[in-house]
Image (cartoon, rainbow, N blue to C red):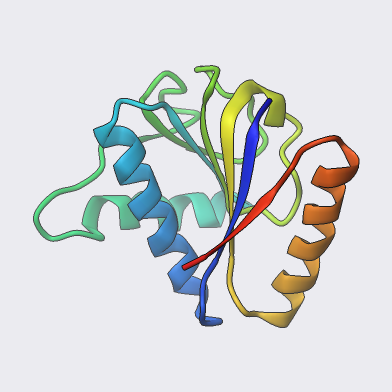
Length: 139
């Protein structure tokens, strides 16, 4: 069964979620794990695309937008299904992915923005209702 984790950031800074997604994608890439970063919209995809090239001065994370190469090891997209099964889904969208079962692990990144906390609490409950056992991880 897919492992679900909610990574909870201590602040309400929106950019922190993007940086955390980049760090997680980098770790996945270094271990050869397929990573799909699911964004809320195309604008967030573009912002994350830029950030993955520059978030660390000493190296970048090779990646592609889903429309350019869905087979890349790190892919940025929205609602598309993953090309590689059993990888890592980093969900930055406020909704659950319709493809959750195609991943071995899903990480939801949460910060302290009140509206995001409310959405994520609802998502946590929905995962439970669907038979998953989501875990909370304080960062």
